[in-house]
Length: 392
Ligand code: FAD
Ligand code: DHB
Image 1 (cartoon, rainbow, N blue to C red):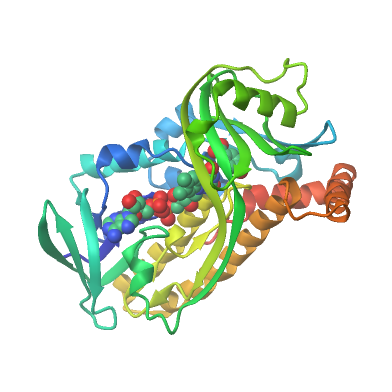
Image 2 (image 1 turned 180 degrees about the vertical axis):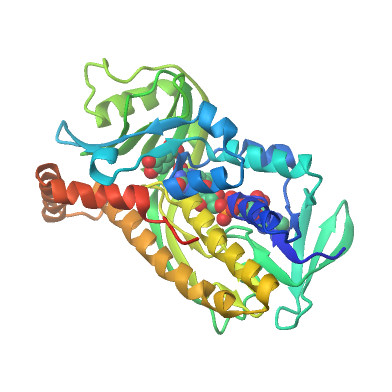
């Protein structure tokens, strides 16, 4: 098989890239290791920034999101039993959209399959060769048979454990990483959500109340990194959530059937450069942020917006200028996003090594934010706009 751009991975990065390229008349083939039901069923992020919403609109793939997504205009942060309310439109002129990552993924897969464009599931990439030549080759296994995809460019959109980053010459790749010793226990519950996205910093640890619809809440608790999600009974989950949210009277948070649980380990990770020869990396393959701030998916979309424009320029004019600028532009933005997510993580979580001095500094920072419109505007701007690329 031969194509112009061989894309590894049918997560948000690979799927958005394929649609953005197609809109410019550029062919691609996506190779995805997992099955379609597995990819569509993976529960992950849920907050879409304006840049991501706009990208879906530009591709004409936003109809279901507009119908079923929930516009979110507030971000609340609780501490000491008080709430800081960030009015997103008032502070930034913009809002975000709550629409599950797996719903975005379903919409992008459906459009690709309907158009008859190649997307091969259960195709595990084993090796990439020739990235320093004009004809790189992606080796993969499908149904027990070894196959090869020849292409002009390889897009490694294959996440943290993928083949893309592993193919980069290790002597040019710089890696920066911070692994946290806690995780987020996430659940989906059939319960009316809180009106606003609410983060809390409590003496018992962090919690977050988000939502997927007016009937489904998405809830998270900070837990030790080695927690088995099934070791928490439903009662224990609700007791802890009420306590951390300062809802001791149990009047505010509605309880309901918990029908899905998962554990997300927390890590900040940046690998650079994001390109070598004809191999370009995007999304979780090259940067991971801790989930506070809800940036991972949005950062992946911003990467492939830049990459698709650079590839378009190459196919239209033969110029490599934008392709050569891809890594610098995206790594610089990735650092800004990692900085924001890491700062929010530090502000809101309970750290085992914190001394009383550090705990008081954390609370003083929250007190400052509570009393300063400028501090609130800074957080709101970064929550909403950090991946915004008006020129792409
Ligand atoms: P992915 O979505 O990981 O897609 C990569 C794809 O490549 C996968 O489908 C994988 O199967 C495929 N692949 C891997 N190796 C190969 C191979 N060798 N051959 C072929 N295919 C391959 N972000 C938030 O903002 N909020 C959250 O609450 C949140 N929760 C998360 C929970 C978990 C458990 C994880 C892992 C991530 C979470 N994230 C969250 C981050 C967010 O979901 C990611 O940033 C986003 O999925 C990145 O998209 P991507 O396309 O780069 O990578
Ligand atoms: C979700 C929401 C967030 O604000 C966040 O930081 C992480 C995840 C969610 O709805 O899944």
